[in-house]
Amino acid sequence: MDDLSSRLSRDLQIAGEVVEKRFKFFTDVIKPKIKTKFLSHLVTTVEDLINEKRMKEIIDSVKEKRNDIQLIKALFASRNVRFYSIVLIPMNIRRRATTRYHNFGASVYYNSCFKDKQIRILIAHELGHIVNKELLGTDNDESTANLFAYIAMQDKNDFYDKDSKSYVFKSDIAILNEILNVCNIPK
Ligand SMILES: [Zn+2]
Image 1 (cartoon, rainbow, N blue to C red):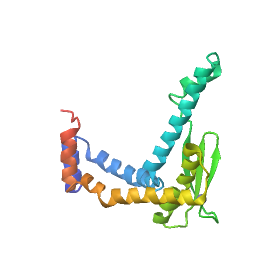
Image 2 (image 1 turned 180 degrees about the vertical axis):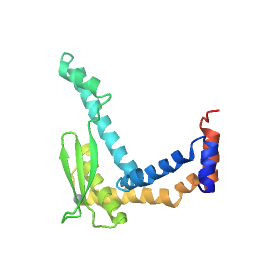
Image 3 (image 1 turned 60 degrees about the vertical axis):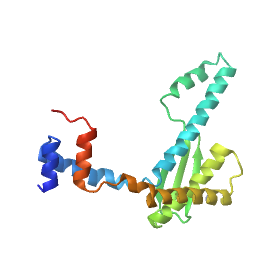
C-alpha cells in the first residue's frame, strides 16, 4: 500500500483491502459512466423544471375537477414519480444529434464519433430544443437552439475557468483532512 492508502486506512478506520477495492470500483464502474453524463447538471435542471411544470398542470386540473379520482391518484403518485426524464444515447448515426419526444421524456441521440467537447455542444443544442418545446412553448427553430447552446456553454466555461477554482483542494491529504473535519468519524 502506498502512503495515501495507509493513511486512508488508518484515519478512516477501514481495512486496506477495502480501500483498494473501493478505489477500483470507482475507477472501473463509476468513472466510465460519469464520462457519458455530458452536461449532467444542465440536463437534470431542465428535467426538474419540466417536472415542476407538469406537476403544476396536474394540481391545477385536480382543483378544477374535484371528483376525478384518477387525477387525484396521479397527484399523489407525482410526489415520487418523475414525469419527465431526459436520456442521452450515444449512437453511430449519420446526423450530428437528434431528439425524440415521448409522453414522459425525451431521448437525445448523439453521434459518438465527435470529440467530447463537440458532443457537449451538440447536447446543449438539443437541450435548447427541449426547452423551447416543453418550457417556453415557442417556435422550435435551429437559431434559438443554437443560442441556448451558446448561453449554456458560456456559463459552463465560466464555471470551469473561474468558479471551479474555489472547489480545488491543495493536496490529497487536504481532502482527507477536510473529510475528518466535516464528516462524522466513528470513534
Ligand atoms: Zn437542431
